[in-house]
Each structure stands twice: as structure tokens, then as C-alpha cells.
Length: 100
Image (cartoon, rainbow, N blue to C red; front, side, top):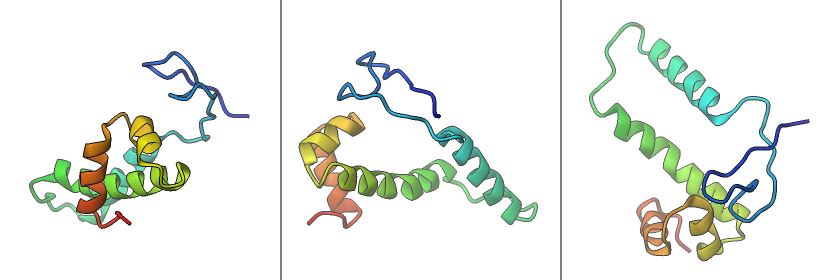
């Protein structure tokens, strides 16, 4: 069984008060594994500049897409879950072509 976590802002399992379960491998570990594979695929070459922006551009669209799906496309609830305001979420949806 996964371990429950405590939401930093609310002190509860999630922003909505429900307790979530962690998967056996956390997000940080999955990111480390993906970055390790990315660097190995470079075969000793230096990565191009802008790695931070590259990672954000790769991670943000599926994050928003999955949260929107989880929230049944309710922008207010999704923005709350992501910890951003609705206007920012709407802009990101348009930016990544995820807006209806």
C-alpha cells in the first residue's frame, strides 16, 4: 500500500482534503531517471543550452493535460489543483493547444 502524503499548504492529503497515495517510484525519481537517460543518449556530448526550458516544455503540457482530464476539464478545479490562477491556466492551455 502506498504512503499518504501531507499537502504543504492545507496540511491534508491534497488541496481538496482527500488523501492521495504515492506510487512506488515518486515523481522526483522518475525525473531523475528520465534525465539520466537523456544524458546517456547524448553519448558524451554536451547538452544544448536551455535545458531548463526544454524540461519545462516537455513536462508542463502533459501535466496540464492530465490534470484537466482528472478534473473533467473544469478549469477552476484544475487551476486550484495546480496551484495557479485560472487566467494562467487558460493561457497555458492555449499555448500548448489544449484549449477546447
